[in-house]
Length: 259
Image (tube, rainbow, N blue to C red; front, side):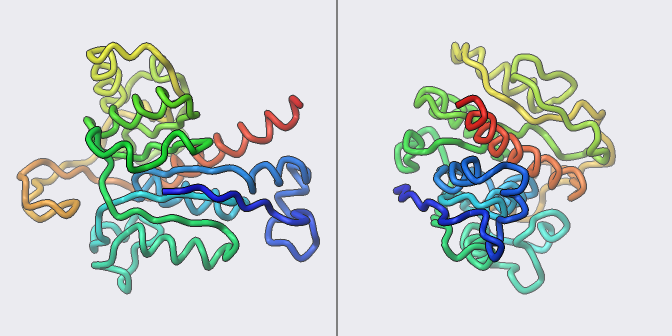
């Protein structure tokens, strides 16, 4: 994966789709957004909305990574999932959608799963930001380690399943998270591997609600596993994705103001 830069010309022009954002950020910040390079790992109920928000905000270069295909159960929360796109690769469909929003954006879609073994295939060190919206614990921990070892800014989503109240979503350093089962497992896994760095996590301390179901149907391109399937609501997952995008945008604009 390569990251060509795509500076945005005259970002505050009246006919620019990003003119309204430029009125808030100023031209210099919007130009920096257009030059930023972001990798989004996981294009489900959190990552798909994050990617869309970034492209709608003038991001110039984005890599979107997900090995899965769209199924009917994705439609309630994933922005690229519709009755028409069921059965198609998530990354490929989302790429088409993002290019409809901004044809000048450099969008690279990879239909593969990130793992410790293939981490070198994703050009993490060439990115300015990495968004972690991965569900699988071992791969999530690996992505965290590789991203921070490369010195790249990381924003990571914790568990958003079995939640109904988006107002309880918070941001904190990973070691300061609380009340989130996935964040606890991430902290434990990182400690076991001697990881001492920190990064910003998006999490919710809302107690789990609803029921789980047995995973007796294929999930994530894998055969039936019998593992539990957690419910999720778009009102929560989309908000988490928007917060992740906001963290990127605010980091860029804050650094602009400091200069």
